[in-house]
Length: 279
Picture 1 (spheres, rainbow, N blue to C red):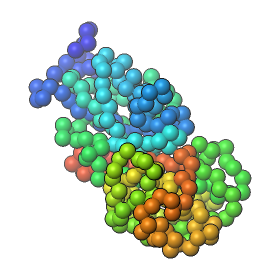
Picture 2: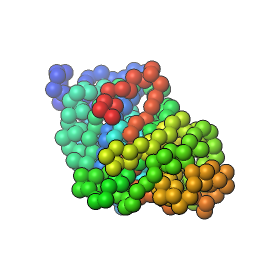
Picture 3: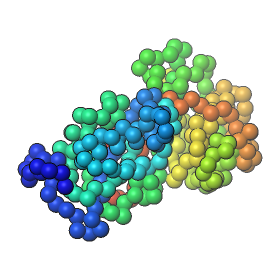
Picture 4: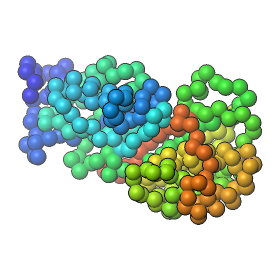
């Protein structure tokens, strides 16, 4: 335990050592601006969200700490409610830790909540679903405010056609056609629970909720939808692409900046609701 630890409201480390398996588990819900990082996961010679978060936690706890994210996001991809967990050999003053963490993290990362969780909780393995949103600025002019969180597409996109196409991929399928070539992860199947494409004041929102997503899957689906939205292909083309199980049949990979991880869902027993306010 760090020296000079005093039991009062302002101390960060509480003098309470875990007796069961000698650790406490904590979960964080955070948001970040993807344009500022080379992705969420640690990489050599790159600035990532995980690097910045671990540096801040290590500084506060004075101990090397490994963080585990619910899943990786690529360079440029944003997160509104990313979830991660870490273990500590001592109990933490949650309120003090949250404010101290945000005080030293770069401004492009904000921790929304921190809580102690059951030791069986695992941010990645316990997740029941992931919700991603792709935002398209379909107005004639680009937007300064939407620049880093959307993709600007010139020319009208037909929402009805895009929604019809999305309906074909709902359910459990082999999504090989929508997976990056040479991805190191051999997984092919996913279950998509919810799909939606809607437009409001020239801004198009594409929402996908699934048990998991393959590498670049949402961006490839979006790139394909854009072509269908331009009426270059009929909505039924999405089904043909899905059945082909070949990346060559799908559209281009949409740019990363329009993609945001909106939420990661868990069983109610974990009670991870506090960080998901104001979706």
